[in-house]
Image (spheres, helix red, strand yellow):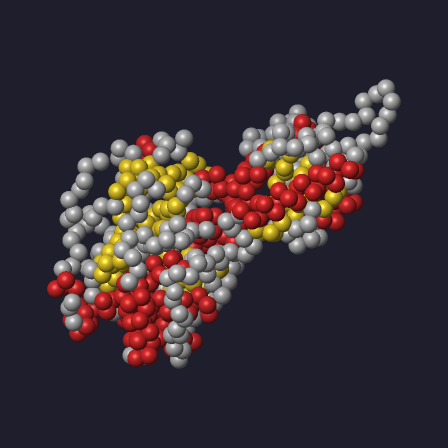
Length: 537
């Protein structure tokens, strides 16, 4: 790929050293062209009954921004709740009869063999728990031989039935599964003792994506063909990872500073509430303005922000190329954003129209503040765009890594240019990628990280089609970190698969990316959340 000339040059050292008074004067010039904040706060009226809290200025005006120590070397925090899995061993002991068929397929036809198999299952599940990269708990295995026994298990506290279908009737199979929880079926072919249901399982007992015919003799079922795993525990693990993502995605509580909207899709917040049960907590800018103003005058808080700025700028491969005061103020905003999440019991945050509201009050941009939150493990996004926030939240939970929300571009020669100014640096959930701290591009003001991602790194993209409930998933590889006149953190990504299909998906909207390959998990989760999934084949 031909190298592009850098046409967006960073500030010189002289320009970086401008005085705080000059910064303040500049911020006033931005504030003079701002629209009224109230113009940007819209409460959706789409018939949803989900609770949305709208705070008045009096609630927050008397509160201070509190300080919590920021440590860049703390382990990346996983905010999701543990996935609880109930293993069920379904079997039967056939009675021997002379001169006739008395046993079905399968190796487990004595109680001794059943005990041996359960011991093996316990060892394998223990190994899986130890190797899992998301919070996972297997409950003790329950042995089931009768329908009455099966019905009782559904009173237990769990998220997923993991059914080891070694033997038993169709009636027993139906009793062991449930429409109230998720179900995964595991059968053995070559990984141990052969299971009867490796032979019995089929569309008579499983849902498919194809319509049933009138002559179909299938029974009512809660299980899809994609819920079946044969032998391979890695296939089981990624399904559980997807279900973990769904569990923590549905009902997400997210603070929306400045209100919620959807890019080219005004119905997006309503869909997020109705379909995904998102609890969008609307906090107005008026309600926090006093807190920001007071923080800028709080000498003790500023001293703490100054010390954290020193710590941040000593991270390896971190280069300051904007006014240092912008970084100090970004830490003050980081404190505020974190306070708002903690006060509302949320682990996700977004803000709207920050360029027209945050700059005049905070004397910086929110880009670096959001980056700090993402690097800790929070789900944090600018623009409050609820077209892309739902897939970003889901991908963040599935991957266990930051989800980078960015602008899209028109695809050509299998390439796209991805860019945004609020970018995480800890994209692998552990290490900090190199970054220059520059001004935010569109305003040429504040602090925004230009993050350099490793070339060759595989990433997963989710690309929603507005609020139609159709999501496109695909993969790419980082090829370059250019320096065009565009949002500060930018990558050229080579798309895997049928990239030409993306031409029909070019919507001048937002995508989200995460390190790694999570397409299987995304497609599996989509069925659970009512989304139509499509990938690049």
